Amino acid sequence: MPLNTLLDRHAAYRPDHPALVFNGQQVTWAELRRRVDSLVHQLRDEGMGAGDKVALILDNCLEVLEMYHAAAKAGFVVVPLSPMLRGSGLTTLVNDSDAVAVVTMRRMVEHLEPVRSELVNVAGDRFFLVDGEADGYRRYPDTSVEPPEPVRAADLTDDDLYNIIYSSGTTGLPKGIVHTHGIRKAYATGHATGCRIHPESVAVHSGSLVFNGAFLTLMPAMYMGCTFVLMEAFDPAELIDVMIANDVTHAVLVPSQIIHLLADPRFDEDHIPSLEMVLTVGAPLHLEHKEELVRRMPKRFYELYGLTEGLCTVLDRDAPHSKLGSVGVPPPFYELRIVDDDGNDVPVGEVGEIVGRGPVLMPGYYKRPDLTAEAIRDGWLHSGDLGRLDEDGYLYLVDRKKDMIISGGVNVYPRDIEELAVAHPSVRDVAVFGVPHPQWGEQPVAAVVLDGPVDPAEVMSWVNERVEARYQKVGVVYAVDAFPVNVAGKTLRRVLREEYLAG
Image 1: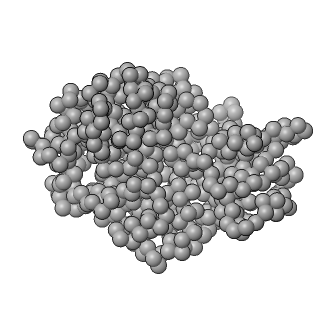
Image 2: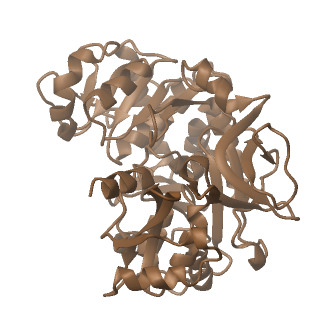
Image 3: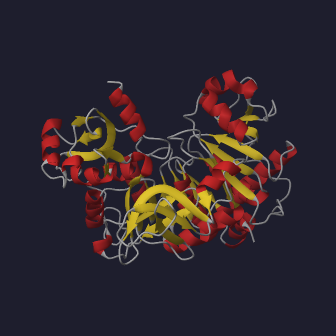
């Protein structure tokens, strides 16, 4: 069975249990079913049906979650897009996805209007606003209206498309990553088990719903019938308040969010005793921050390394403390290998490319068989990430292939320098990247976010005294107030490098 029976099940067997919480508004499973059925009826009246793509250009709101549930039940294909998109970046993705409708908000009208005529597949009357109306933009269907009759779940299979999520596009054109109902069902069952999510759990999400990390708890919540708490945006103090007020048990966070939370003394087990899981995802979390998190939240820390395309390892809360520097092991039904440039397995402890496969492996990039063939070879997804396995099979990340610095013919991994630099008592966060050097080809440069007044030159001396090799010494350390990040919260080293080189 695909996902489409779940909403009806929870509405029947736990109708009064909270399904969603947003801005103080609580929606039960029975109410959510009525809202979604009303939405499906109104979209079908617009001539839309299973397989039709709907582009969502929205900040976090209940309407995004309604659309995700409607996709599960009725077979619409959701295409979540970042509200940060502008101009050709926006038109390219809407057109590439073959979206026939756009659901957005008033503040996007000024950015959509100049390119609206270029959205070739969207009918002129299929632009919907969740927060009102505007010239040529209709109000999003009123989901408070009682549906004329319950919606029967569409005749779907595990192979039907559920969503197209575009890669963050840090290099080159973003690619449409396809997830089917079967893949999202594997998210639901696998992560519910791995994260110990149960019917009485309360998951909170404070990052963008465009980010695939949202589905790590959203799909288990759909599956288990538990409560999903959504915030408009991440704010560390507000998130702690929400956790306390809602007895939150599970939270998925990116490293930059965890660093902000660790600056608040309330982020510990005494103030948030309900919390059972803090899962970090999206980018490596520095060991220094892992140690502090584990100290404050014993037996609650999980780390997930993975690609939206379908590769995954998990560092479980019960893993030995000696493995804290790793990103864990493949979950059940997943496989992992470390290979050289010819695709051969490398010995234990040696660095190579991380490749893997499992039940969430994408069928491919949307309409791009050429890029799919590059990424998936002989059934194995090639990550472009470098790592090594220890004797117990735990994976240790080294770096992205594209981020590796070659200095004097030697491979220099920014992550090694970052792990050292962040141990400085005044360094809150650090990002290392390579810049051209007339003698060595490239040299490392470090951007740092500092706590308190400290001279970046002192930080550079401190780091360079402690690196293991001469080629790891940084040529420059400079301070920034915050790192540029994409919608998923990942630090954009490329942007830092471009800004540095531009002076």
